[in-house]
Length: 523
Image (cartoon, rainbow, N blue to C red; front, side, top):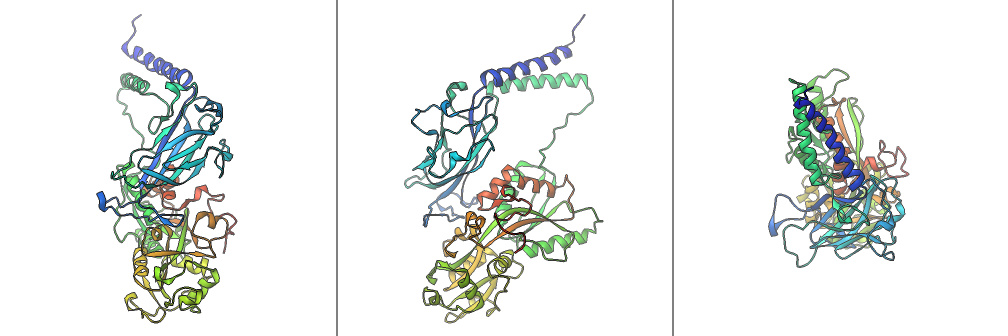
């Protein structure tokens, strides 16, 4: 009986990958520790380079501005088929440190564990835990017990070391060892190939080619289709709305276009003009399309700081993130902390000079966003107890009288911060990330609490809002609008949201409400 080449190819295509997988995963790959660098970015203007690069996110640590801050997110994982216990780490039993991460050219100013598998005990990462610390340019991690396929993520905030002049930083240096681990037991970078070694990958690729050839013989005329990733969709997506959330959306759009070559997300200087403007734009586009009930636009999204107003029944909400806002003042005001009552008195006109709250003898000038701004609406609802802002006294902020109080309005967050920085006695409101990146303003604590996610979560800090994505009707599942929303909710999208100081809704106890812990559904 003759044996055809197709039959031989089929047998090889099945037998050899099975043998290779048994060798790699059962015999050789039984114990393996891996890591991935999921985010390593400086907070600088990517359109500039060299010594003139500008810092977009002026971060502080213990009240001191960081020179050239950067953020690194690493994922530590058990990439093998056997559990890793404390005794497996290559370190003396008296040394609680299992993994060391060095950052050449950078010093560590802070770190936290942002995510862990449910099987990873949280006690390894509490403040003061043995082996969990930072020293200079190094992060030290304890001998964490990792069952099969478990992981945790470490987010480090770094600053450039004095004397380091290279424009780009070297990759983090991760050092760890596992007793009895494969290939010497050293921790391996698994960013692209978490399981298979290079040799096995080449072998499997060759065998896949053989199998494909055999399939072509057997199923002549059938076309092989390569499915796009779940989040990818083709077409053009138009984004509009919140200026506070615009940095997240610009970065997410850039990354989405890189991941999905058939997607196009055009963004201009006027793409984000405010929450209400974005909702108006979305509603107008939907009405022009004259879609029947049950169908929605698949090429538009609007982002709003907080829920929509009434009268927009076809705009459907999807909470995306918890956002923080802050009050900012001109540096000559002489104040850094106001009680909630003092803030309300300032906006009610009962406090008109900073000397009334032990500041400098300078009149209060209120710089506000135009009506329709989600940042402004949140200020009125969350901080001022529903009271509107006082009347405008100057149509142009340049026309504010220097010797008496007044109020004016501007269009965007950047313009507001610039105006506060150039107007003595000015008080304004902004998204936290943009305020921290601006050298000319000073953030105001409320009742002693800074604008932090922890403060909002514990009910101590009041100036926060839920960032909501709106669609016109229900977009088709295969549309670019639906794909981009899924992208924001996956791991890469959540990392982008976190890197800009926001918290993904998926990480909260009640993602659909997306509110800090203990906050009631209605305020």
